[in-house]
Length: 190
Image 1 (cartoon, rainbow, N blue to C red):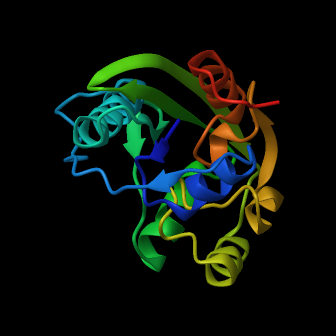
Image 2: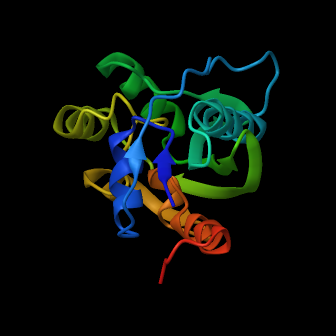
């Protein structure tokens, strides 16, 4: 059985490698622009499915795993900052507050979604001063991460708490649900 990860994210690739299954990687050609008024959870679910379906249609018979993550603070989306100033602004806005991260996955085969799941993680940042934020951003450069942190790295020091059913979801792929979906599809996952 062939498995394809419909993502070029190095974070998702590293997570999926933990399951010790052979897989290929394909870039999904999907417009990731949020729709007007689209909530972060709906965005994550829509994009995970769109990525899985886009690659699935081009790879008959293969199982295709799509995933996406969207973050929100007070209902407003938190995207990837892209640069230092935007990362500092995001962390400043989240200082002393809670943000919600929705991470969705979809498993498709032959142009049909066979399994889907969404995990929600709440992160509570401690009160951060400007110097702490700048030191962190300069040290880890989390410009490609929604919320401007890497919880698997130095970013963990920014938090008071992380509430989640699956700690890997915050990194970008909920492995508990992924393993369950792959087992149901017939893959030999422990």
